Amino acid sequence: GGDIPIGAGLSSSAAIESGLAFAINHIFNFGIEKLELVKLAQRAENEFVGVKCGIMDQYINIFGAAHKVLKIDCRSLEYEYHPFTRDDLRIVLCNTMVSHSLASSEYNKRRAECEEGVKILQRYNPQIKSLRDADIEIVESHKNDFPEIVYKRCKYVVGENKRLQKACEDLDRNDFVAFGKRMYGSHAGLRDLYEVSCPELDFLVDIAAKQSGVFGSRMMGGGFGGCTINIIEHDKVNHFISEVSGSYQKKFGKTPATYICTIENGTGILQ
Image (cartoon, rainbow, N blue to C red):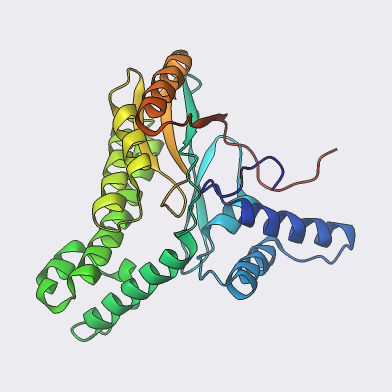
């Protein structure tokens, strides 16, 4: 994982898994294709660590490209890139300094709740294999068939899938105002429907929304701690960090670590 903070919701485990798989493949010249390396790294998380994670974190570690956002189809495992090329914007992560100790167990619970929702929808439409096959109208029409908690999870996932598609269109148009609004919408869903946020994350997002030059903010990672991701005008970054850090220190008695990031290429060989 290099200098990726552990327990900050930045997928340090996926970085270790992907990096180790890549290194062994390179050193011993096994000739394993990149997608197979991704699958091996995911298996390590699923079968050894015991987290039933998807493939996104390992995928981006291997297939990441500089100045591009990667959209993955987790069914076909196809992918496409969308541009993130605004030189006047910066990505700033704010670490709550709260370890996301609940994230792994709660992830497994959320996955089970979503799978229960799919089974309920399949009674009415056998073509639905996962929540990506449903739309919000279908979910709402069967609201009374769901346990309340399952309804909330399904509503979030279906809405987030739609939001992701629109966000990619925003990036293609270089429309970061619209993209930022979808970030806030995503956080609201994670907070209210998927229920994986925490007071510290919510506070950081709320404070960010009040700062000049901030386009969008949301939690990232598994939740229950970890980091927020913020898109900010480059000349407002120092002021943003100062304001957010001061407000957070006053509220929670600790200073959030901050990381100014760029989007770079995925796992590779350093010369």
